[in-house]
Image (cartoon, rainbow, N blue to C red; front, top):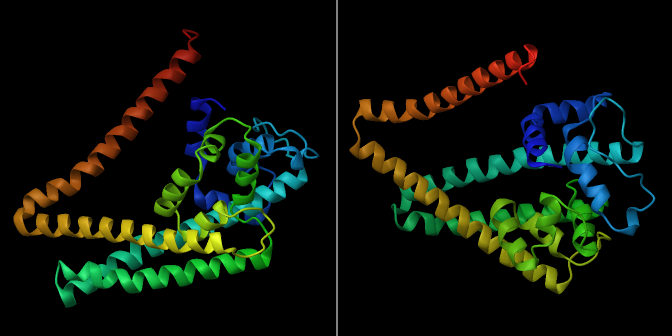
Length: 271
């Protein structure tokens, strides 16, 4: 898939649409089916050799039923997981750190908050792992990516990530996902058989790295916001809040003008 096609698919990949299409089982191809699943199925090794080669959809022609069901399951799983993680990472973390700073001070507060946040993260991630193994269903596409990693084949972003190696994958997944995804991806095999001693070490290390990152991140953000509120005037704060909105609107308007002009040139036969 070219960079241009990838950017177009990314624009169409809205989470509400993904959920509604997966739930209603409409005939319109899912964005995940159009983009991610073809790459996963075509890149996986011989275990999936019985599955037909899936090309990115350019029409409403349905993909093989097995692949479509897998795509719908992964689409729902990824969507639920995304919003759940957003609530935890961008809701629970800043609230806990702010509360700790109020009680123990700006310097000591984040250190105090780190302990209960780490324990809560470990409990939640371990519960997710147990539920994942109990269901024996690949809700997030983790096992498919592992097959690509083991086979060493395929092209595209997912295949490149799969070839990074365990250490880079550990840090990237610990920071941008959670200990559950990190451990499920890095453990050996795909039989949902629980945690070996190596997997437990990966899980605990991921809990530590993930919580260090999110604690430092939100401590820095809160400090910057508090400093801005203490030093900047009200008009300056209003200006700073308006500038990002203006930049986004300007970008959207510029894109609209560009697309309109491009369609006009095509309609007149100049392209």
